[in-house]
Amino acid sequence: MNDKAIAIVALDDQAIGRAQALADRLGLELATIEADNSQLWLSEHRLALKVPDFKQPFSIDFSSGKYDHRRRFGGGRGQAIARAVGLKQGQTPSVIDATAGFARDAFVLASLGCQVTMIEQNLVMSLLIEDALLRAADDPDIAEIADRMQLHQANAINILAEGKLQADVIYLDPMYPGRDKSALVKKEMQLLHQLVGTDIDSAELLAAARAKAGKRVVVKRPKGAEFVGGQKPAASVHSKNTRYDIYPTR
Ligand SMILES: C[S@@+](CC[C@H](N)C(=O)[O-])C[C@H]1O[C@@H](n2cnc3c(N)ncnc32)[C@H](O)[C@@H]1O
Image (tube, rainbow, N blue to C red; front, top):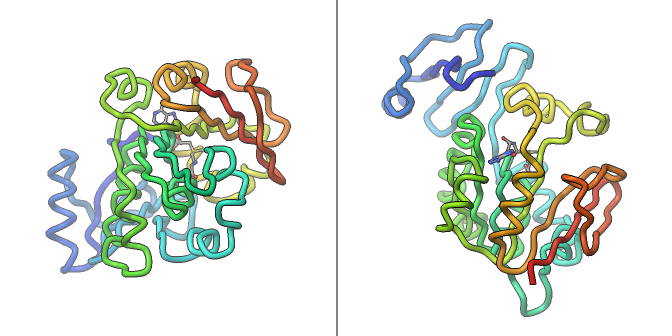
């Protein structure tokens, strides 16, 4: 799906100003609801992506569903992702999440106290994250967490090479090319696959991250998957369906 193929729709009068501002920012025209096209739907308080193959419009909401459940019951600093990035008593590393996607992992890490700089190359995904951050800033339960999260829309390989972003940990979760059936059956992953396809630059991204991370790079992989770029990690942390490969930088 091409970003420019997306049209912007204001669902109600209150959303017209914001929809027009977004259309101007992206150089697009406002449109009306059209079932055959991918569209960004704006209501007064929410941006959602509507694609023809999916019944429901999709948006990111840090205050509900899986985000909220994981924040409350995900296991805190004992969970695998926390151990992989090096969260310990008295140690809360800063993190660059260079493949932000749905910002799920970024939200978990920010919930645990990390400053998280997100990088997402896909324009639509980054707009959905930006909208979720705006709403979270107005929600007293999670505003403090959202305040620890920043977003850059860019290719991480390029922006890391510029050297302006720095963190103890660079976290990568590249798209896995398809054999991961458990991920593919999930609706949201199907949507992401439609939107961004498969990452072909994971090995290059890992090299860029290893050159820049303060302490370590962590790569999330499905259980049993090969190492990115064939590069063997120093250690791995395992959870039920996921493996976190750790590449220390010093
Ligand atoms: C599997 S998703 C990440 C899901 C994320 N960990 C979460 O918890 O929601 C991979 C995302 O990384 C993005 N991505 C892949 N390569 C990238 C790059 N070089 N720079 C920036 N974003 C990239 C893709 O566009 C996609 O949205």
